[in-house]
Image (cartoon, rainbow, N blue to C red; front, side):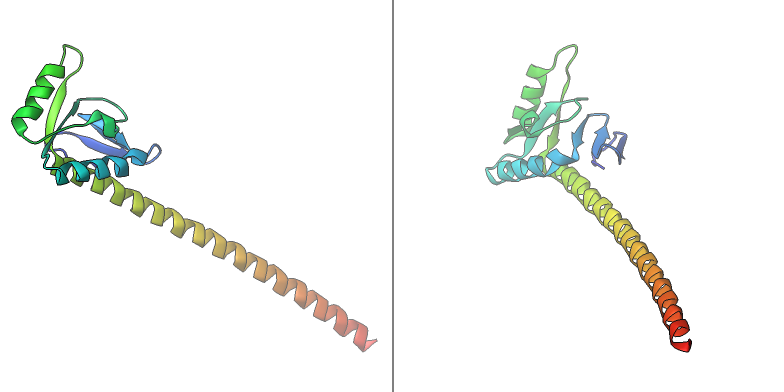
Length: 147
């Protein structure tokens, strides 16, 4: 889940999306956003401004700034009576993307474990079936030899 303070967040497993009162990020976009934020941080930027409540935020929805003042100015200038913008530190948003990616890895590992279990069950059934068939064949051969 994205860790924005004072906001209710949840991750829906079906859609692989982080849902938050400030907006949502789809799992497929999290790595791209994280990489963009890392590059912005390396360039000396420290803050982002983005639209509140927007579903499916992408890297293009985050405006980066060196100072909090510039980010707040951008948020103020782009906010309307319908669209509101908010400011967060790049580090805070980056941690949120890390959290989503970690949750994704855990989910993938759980799915892999389930699939491996199903494959092992199938192999066991096949081996058991072969064992029974081999047993019937041996009995048949024994009957033929005893005649």
